[in-house]
Image (cartoon, rainbow, N blue to C red; front, side, top):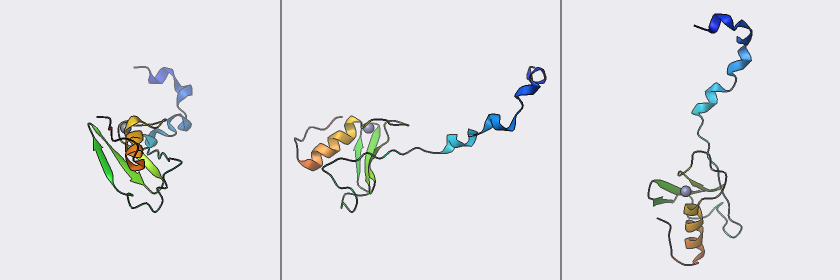
Length: 91
Ligand SMILES: [Zn+2]
């Protein structure tokens, strides 16, 4: 049903990018006072309820959002902990 009535839409470009769904987007967030490159915490994972924050050479990542656009509270919490500003963690 349907397809034969829309031959004009059968273009190769229509499906461009369909395979990119498999790519996992990892966004790194940096902190202006924390240098993550070469930091001994690189590779450290901070577990939270339902997600994890990990420090990479490029910055922090968190698994709570598939496509994070802003730094989440988990990352902020880890940063504050590293900076020694309070010890209150978001759960
Ligand atoms: Zn998070």
